[in-house]
Image 1 (tube, helix red, strand yellow):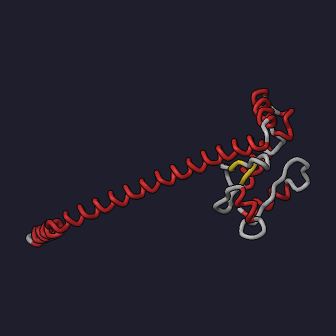
Image 2 (cartoon, helix red, strand yellow; image 1 turned 135 degrees about the horizontal axis):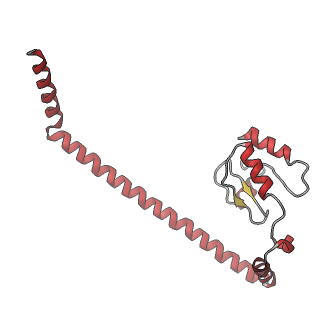
Image 3 (cartoon, rainbow, N blue to C red; image 1 turned 90 degrees about the vertical axis):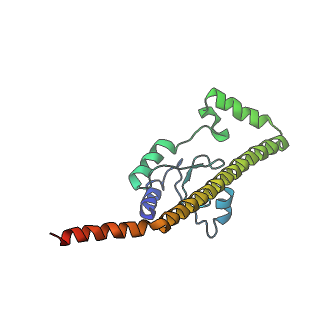
Length: 169
C-alpha cells in the first residue's frame, strides 16, 4: 500500500484544499494518533481535521484516488457553514451558542456513550469467545468418547473384512 499512498500524496501535493499525508504513529505522531483513536496500522482517516472519519474503501491507488476526487473537498463544518444544509447549519449554530462548559459536558457525555458501546461490544465478544471455547470442548470430548467407544476398531474390522474378501478372489 505504501507505494500507492506515496503516489497519492504526490498527486495532491499542490492542492490548496485537499491534504493527503501520512503520520508515523510510532514516533513523533504518536500523540496525534492517540487523540484520533488509532489502534492499528495502517489506518486511513479523512474529513474535517477536528472530526476525522475512518476510510473503508480499497487500498490500491485507483480506489484511493477516486475516493479523494469525490470526497476530499470543502464540506459542511463550522469553518464552512455556508456549505451546510439547513438542518446541519442549525445544529452547528446550536453548538456554537453553547457555553464552553456545556459543550465540554455534551462532548464528554457522547464520548462516554462511545466508550460504553466499545465496552459492551468487548463484553459481547468475550462472551462469544467463552461460548466458542465451551462448544469446542464439548465437541472434542464427544469425539474422544466416540473414538473410545470402538469406532477405530470398527473401522479396522471393516477394512480387514474388505481385504479378506479381495483375497478370496
